[in-house]
Length: 140
Image 1 (cartoon, rainbow, N blue to C red):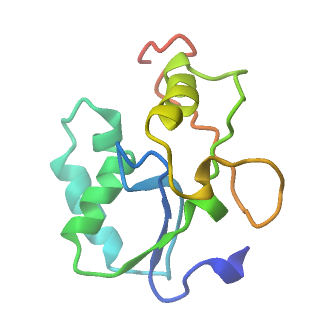
Image 2 (image 1 turned 30 degrees about the horizontal axis):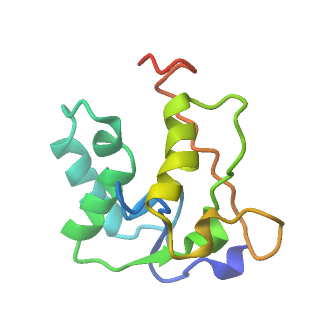
Image 3 (image 1 turned 90 degrees about the horizontal axis):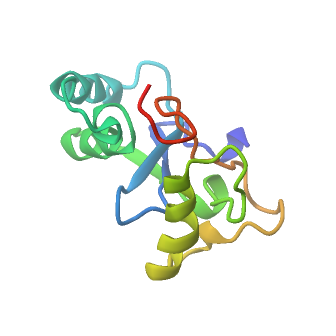
């Protein structure tokens, strides 16, 4: 697993939800003291009062930091690091099921990020869970 992470720059995971964001914050890696994180914290403070959690602290924040920063970052391919667990409904918000099951059919992804058939060639499985909402979608 660690051999596939970049050694000289920040690594983030490509998002299969391309209509919403470019990257995911489900897995991030970097060399110690990478200056990219100072740029991310600048954007974090700038977005501190935003109500949309994806922009305040989530994947959209990460996209904004990558756009703002002059320091390089590498996007790990979603087919290896963020396959979408289609068909998993237990402990999942209905909005997440909607995104996974319906949006992928309306806006098909061109890569294998939505194919989750076996354990070959992938290192992560992001269940698209959130800690800021209940199972019914209520904000905590």
